[in-house]
Image (cartoon, rainbow, N blue to C red; front, side):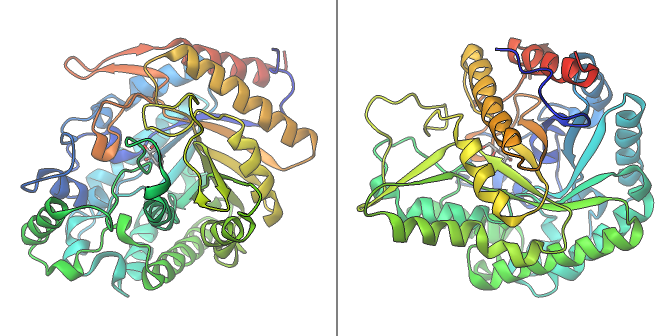
Length: 430
Ligand code: BGC
């Protein structure tokens, strides 16, 4: 299928990473503590990850050579502010170098300021249920923008602001999942986890020298109080970005399953859409775009969230292989009347030919949305590299590029060439 000439000029064609998942040795972050606490639920620690902190230049060059014109990556708060109130000029210089490399290669950087991880010192002080956190996030944002603002055309303030709400819902419906391997994207299922989980949490609290009830990492932000703080943090960051550089385009990103309603499921489907999407719109009213992140669908029937149908293809994460979900989600998000950027879409599989097919079908859906005049500005595949998939460690393979972690050698997969070629031909108007 030929689709390379059919996308608008200026369309962003990118891939994404997140600092903790690729950089390596993010030792001042809460996740580093969680990975190493006794009884950890993580399959393995992140360790050197993909050593992207050192190899970013080669990686960005590879993306450019493949044909991409955008790269979404995150700046790590725990590196920029490793201790409470102390800003690391060296870390900011590092990210200035990453941004300069993108510009040198003609790659538009899309910067995320918070992607799951937070500084460990912030956890000591009440994490995402502390009223101070939005102000501290704002101060970190100001520090980043003061030094780097002129190099940053796009910011996603907070990645998947709704992830804890989505995880909570998946957990509430865990009984309906037929597939025992079905897990939420980031994999931490706080409420349902058993005794060993509690022991591990206790160990994390001890390690951080904080009472257990104050240990509120970003993944445990499903309470109303925490959600209010996230929205506040986003709004403060957006205002800080706009006052530093009004040209920078700002948005939040949301994890969105394609919610499909079967007879009898109407009320629950409406509730889910509301709690995971529509309730965020007031906080996004002054944003420039919405970051759409989608991996699969969720079918809702009279009995609740339905399990995968027997025999459907699933990904390494256990959820259904269903590339058309992206189109469904874009059509829902379009109701907000804002430009959209697909800031994540992808799948984990060892069979790269299934990834090529997935991308082709997902893009066909984006194309249909564009035909209907929906305002989609870009498609960013998750992920550039096979990387650290949170509690699942390095087993799930989301990347367009394979990484041999013993040698840090990269090997571009067919899917990387496939999507890169679409990007290149589209940019050339061929
Ligand atoms: C997150 C990524 C994660 C991906 C795949 C998204 O929820 O933003 O950090 O690796 O899904 O599970």
